[in-house]
Image 1 (cartoon, helix red, strand yellow):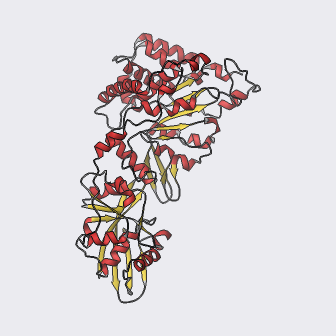
Image 2: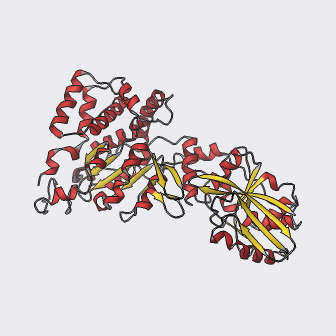
Length: 514
């Protein structure tokens, strides 16, 4: 007798449906075929123990389990539940009527309880796309799967609940229903950090407002204790809210990486990732023998903050150059090729020299001749070219720290950012994949970044004196376009270009002198 159940596996950030075929014949062997890894092969022992501890009969006959398609490697323990249900169905302990309607995923414990897994949202989206009626998942992952509309989602605590549901008995699982838009709206404005906590630093706040408005990359350079990390951590509070589509895409990536908490069905705030400087290339970019998204993909639609930038390995920083341009990363190996989305804002922070006090207004730098230049050279020119805004952060004075007058809060700044983003959204309405000025292609750049003679002459003088590259030229004009959007004017004016040029601190000659 042959029975089919259906499960799914995640490859990259997308899921592939797997058909579990269970065949019962005369004999006493157990065969598991279809390119399973060790975790899948070990399912036999978990299933046998779960059956025994739940008074279920494990057939004393030859069982052949085929996982199709056979050319895809099956990884992990999520196939325990569909294999177990297939064995129960082929031995007539579970009815067959509902099996073809549902995707089943879950790892079995020896007592029959079902453990949480990763990638559930990607699997639920694939199940809906392929026309399945519903999906049965571990109860800890039910809210995550329930954000998919028009798909029945059932969360199971143990094997017995699944059997009761499939046999249409009382006491089975209840369908999980989530009002996604209501949940999304409740969480979207909940920020722990606010720019109101920052004393002084008005020029830095202005730069961050511009960066948030246009989606531009930022690097902060300044002495220890000047507030670089404090400012960077508050950038998310002034970014425009994610759309529901962006939230689903972000949740999908975090689900694949196992980062979604059980009590949260959807990620409503833009991610803020802060990897330590000891991170490896694969940890940042993604990949590995069992491919997983890296930090740049986990920061998709959000912020990637690299503190103490020169302390990162040079090879780690250089692998970001292509994703910063293409906003996607391709992991190519001998046996597979995977694309991960990587549209993020890069925010980096660094000291100006090893001692931290080069160009400090009060403290003297103790670094020897040439040390500052060698320190700055740890960051390659091509990488700096891809960072739109360079900001020199100076220490906050005592008078500013002691001032009790409240600073402007994130809410007020976010309103101006939102107005600028609305202008950009309307501008690129028919351009697929472009949502802000930083994402402009060459075609949009030529169309929307025209400047008059005064602006052209100003930019020419800056390029001659600062030795700017062609990429830096593009970056300055994109930032100027964002400043013009904040002023709600159609054309880029010389004053906008002048302000954009100021945000190229590391291109100035004085940073190479010591």
